[in-house]
Length: 267
Image (tube, rainbow, N blue to C red; front, side, top):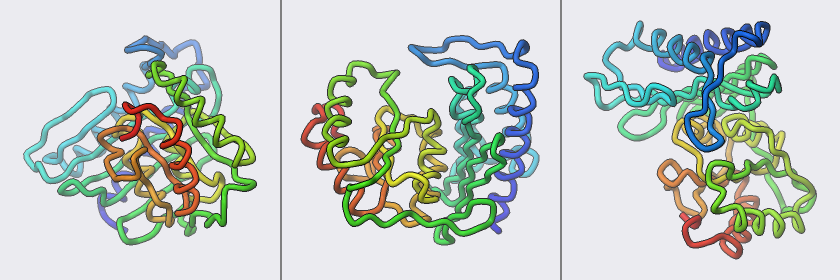
């Protein structure tokens, strides 16, 4: 195993265990609003501190991009750790047990290793570039689709970008004719991992941040998924718009995105 993946897993488990334990004392969870429909809790911050300390203990010179702390510069500019200490904060605040810790390591702009940990299910999704994807050390693969019939697609509503809601629901409505059903679970990192594991057939969402996507997209790609932006390109880390599925699934989703999306979304 890649030594950095080892550290990422150690950090994710530490943070995940802290988050799970915090749910036992709900009255100690303090949440504050940091943007439109965007919340952060003391637990997000505590989990992030645990991750940063674990990384710094082994790799003091690496750069870290963290959801709550922003960019922490290091001497070694070639390596970046991209971390989301709690992907699914809204679920966590409500006590809905579906959220994850997401950690990715990028080297010279390419994601090398990734892990996403779901502490409530004790499920650890990992990937190393060129080495496939695993769930609790067992190999996972994306489901290859013939067409969209009978498919279950994961998505997320654009709750931070409601100016796109009309176009988004047009896409959803058009897709609903082709697919069987949708899932909207509240953690983009886990949605991408569920595509990798064949638990859902595809995923699309707009307006995500790099820390939402970084680990999950490598896990999905290493499991054989195609991951694109809404224009069919690979700029999803910049635009925050993601489509992930097998080749035919991506084609089927993008068709409706192109036909129903507005110009601002198609990137």
